[in-house]
View 1 (cartoon, rainbow, N blue to C red):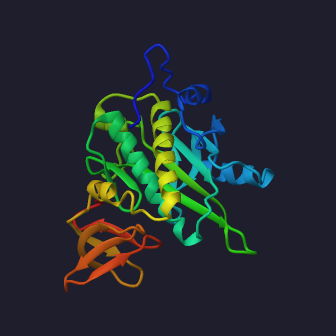
View 2 (view 1 turned 90 degrees about the horizontal axis):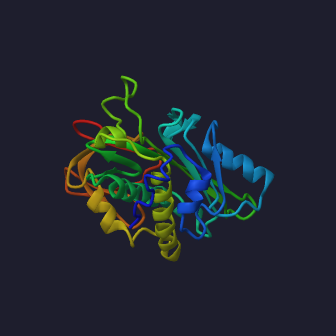
Length: 282
């Protein structure tokens, strides 16, 4: 478990490369760290750095508290207002089949959820596949992108982008019923270095386990315990046709198992499919 290590004497609130490096005890994740005052997108920043340095090491992290053109699933925007939240991306070179790369999104979601619970003591949950929610509202979004070599169809790199609402106090009207922050939920703010270090620490441990088996069998029990929709009615928004059922949890491939009205069980793959609670976001 990640334990708070920031004392009142060293507390800075703002992201600090020096502070993060002093707190990190990871072997690879965060071994090379770029703490940026402002950036369009931390995912795009790592892509640019790879273009100029194809030997960019696995575990390289780009992080900021001021992201102006971030993006989420399906091209949705993800803006990180200056100084209150964190946006970071992790550069990976996993030797796995490209079809398994999407599972890293679920690995990251569990890392974030663990960190939020460590920090707040609150009952944080996961909305499949990759949203972390507190009190029924979203505090984190994750976007995973992959580049595959055309010659042999092997992975060139995977970038896992993570955005966490840490100290935001208000949201636009269209998001106010769906989004929250750790500060709103807890009633006090947090040093931004704390969630950053916690997420990277938990992610490395989970990532190492994932690489051993290339599936999620090692973490499905924990993930399903945290799944906000488990044993609840859901609506699957599939472009081929919407349907309703009961969420049973994920399998070792990260697919959501949904029992439909006729008793059959469908395996739902994230891709272009979304899942909503029958009566709202979760």
